[in-house]
Image (cartoon, rainbow, N blue to C red; front, side):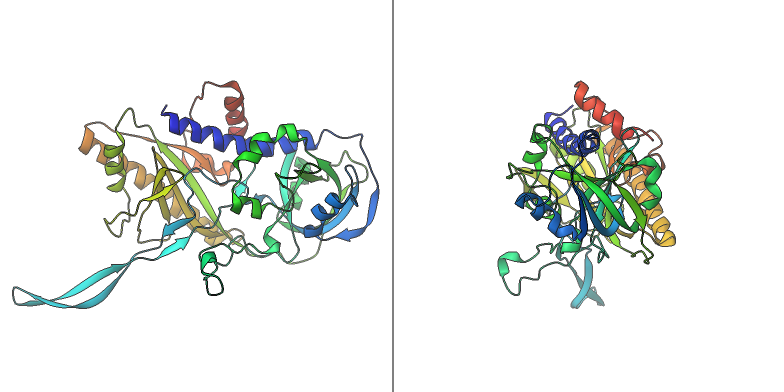
Amino acid sequence: MNMLLFSQFKDALSILNAYKTIMEFGSSFKRITGILKNKFYDINEVYIEICRGNIKFGDVIRCTGFLSKYSQTFKPISYIPTVTGSGVEKLIGLTKINGFIQQKMQLEVTMKSLQIPVKIIPPFENKRLCFLYRDDFNSFVYPINDGSSDVSLKGKIMIPESGKPIPVIIDKNQTHFMDKYVNINAKIDLIPIEHIEYFKTMYDNIMLEHNNNFFNPLSEKCPLYCLNVMTENTDTKIELVNKQIPDPEAQIFIELHIDNDGVDQKKMNSIINKSIPDLASDKIYVIKNQNIEATPYITKGDITVIYKEPNIIGLYTIIKLFDDKIYAEKIDELHQYVIKLSRNIQSESMNQIGKQLHTKTDFIFDPSKADFFDSRGILRIDLADKMYNDIIKWYKNKQ
């Protein structure tokens, strides 16, 4: 395996493992019980009160909010903050060719900020990791700063307070509370710092902002905590609130890699460039991010395609999570796009190098949908390291 690809996989798996660690260690402090707090805490004040010493490890607090299985806690390998928008051809004039009047068209392309996609963390043993958002939560898609007040902020994703959750460990038999408004009595669990060292190094500014209600890599007192409402804790409970659930938009993603079998990078780039199903222009915008080249393609449809060296392809699209009809249509659209892209890569590689290159599915916003997109399964790789292969086994487990 290419060493850059190997490193990219290890980084992505380490982030996922951090959330597995929250479930593993956050639920292990069963005998530590503090004070039951009578007041209801706003989601955005819990971490502040912990740092002030007003809430302690083991205390049980009361909160209300929207409990979701979705979170913006994982940044795919292919993700880049700025991508090309859909290309639009505009008439810029007329020209006469061989006595015929022809329209002169120009492709206009805008750059746009790419929202962090949502992700579902797979279960671990009998536990699920959910995320509690404020009760005014309504979307995973946030406004973009237009730079009118400060040009340096232009293009920045403006994450509202309602988009900054707290992780909550629940039992698998409590999953009927997911994606509902709830009141909870939850125990405060602190995650030992030695279990999150790698987690600390991998977060950038936008991820820190998304998750600053439960994670601060600079804090010695409380770098990471979660809430726990598992039924084995006698003082904890969770109950539904009679409130209509929101209809949030969210960015979703699926990520593939190509078994390149020693194909040089220039030839690989050419194969991918000619395989995009709805390419609007052969003009290629290459963006360098951390010295790695990424290409966001100008496409005609709603699916954003990013190719990142050495051979990673990410597909992103906005979806309505809880509108069953629209959800099914968009998932099927993404599925058909993946099929066409994979077939194009096979055909184009045969044309250019005389053999077929094949895609493999790696990461997806919802691992339970993996077989729908790729019947062969996901993460069909061997990193020759027991720790990482164990993470892969957990991620692929259909619990």
